Image 1 (cartoon, rainbow, N blue to C red):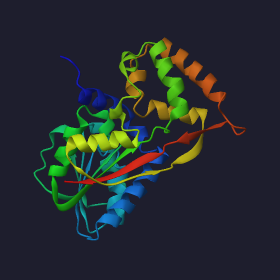
Image 2: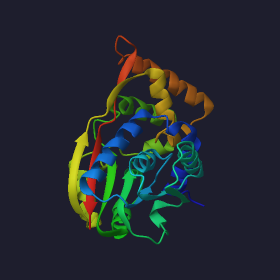
Image 3: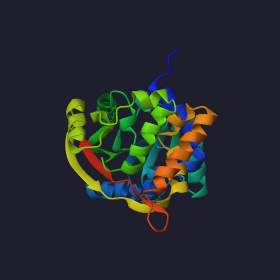
Length: 273
C-alpha cells in the first residue's frame, strides 16, 4: 500500500514528540498568535479549535491566557497528542479536549469562534481544501489564524542539509522542491492559497524570531522537525557521514561563540469566510 503524506507525517512526528516542545521558537511564536486572538476577538467565553496541535504549544499558551474559553485540539500523531495531554495536565489546564484526528478529515461536529493552525498547512497536499474546510467550521464572525515560515527561515541550514540528504540517499529529499509555492514562504504564496481556498484575507504580517544556537543544537533541531523523515531514510553509515559533513560546513558559519543564528521568521495570517 502506498504511503500517504499523512502517514509520512504521522510516522515522522510520532518519533520526535519527546523533543518537539523543547524548541524555543514555537513558544515565541505562540505568544504572537495569542496577541492576534485578543486583537480580533473581544469575547472571553470563546470556542477555539487548534488543528495539528503538536505537543500543544499554541493551545497551552492560549488556554492559560484565556481561562474562560473552551478548547479542542487535534493531531494525527499519537505521540504528539500524548505529550500535549501530559503538558496540559502538568500545567493544571482543564479547558482543553484533545482528539486524535487527521486535519483533512475532521469530525468534531462543532462551530468555532477561532481556529488556529501553526506551521502545518505547508505539509499538506491540497492545503487550500483544508483551509476552506477550516473556514466552514467557523461561527459567524469567526476567524482562522495560521502561521508559516518566511523564505528567510532556516536558510543557512536548509542550503547545507538538503543537498547532503540528496547526496546520501534520501528519496524524499530528491523529490522535494524547495521553491514550490505550496511551501508558503512568500506573501504571494499565501495570497494564492487564500484565493484557491476562496477565503477572505484579513491580515498578513511577518515577525522576526531569531537567536543564536550551537551547531549541536542545530543538529538536534534538524532531527526533531520536518527533516526527521528524510534523515530516517538514510542508512546508519550514510547518516553518520552526512552528520560529519553538516557539522563541518555549519562550523564555517559560526560566530566567535561557536553559534549560528537561527532565523525562524514567520508569517501570521488571519482569514475569514
